[in-house]
Image (cartoon, rainbow, N blue to C red):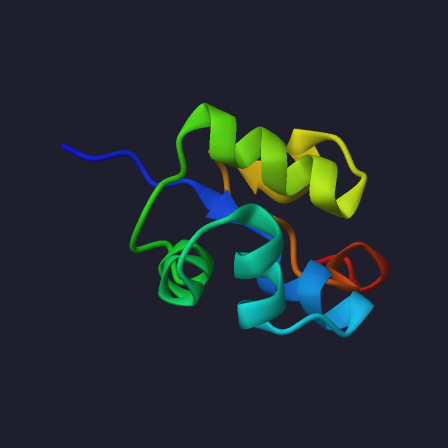
Length: 79
């Protein structure tokens, strides 16, 4: 049984106008790895997760979670 790791990589990239390829180059991974991570098809090592968080200058909990992230605006709508 594999555990799902949820992430906000795509959202963080979009906020900052960074392509998958740019992020991959900064992290030293293949750009397809970033896609696999974003889609939840691959769970990062602790080392890679920490490097991603450091790249975006946020705590690792902002990027990764074992529970789904709430939808943006859900709190205001009471969803």
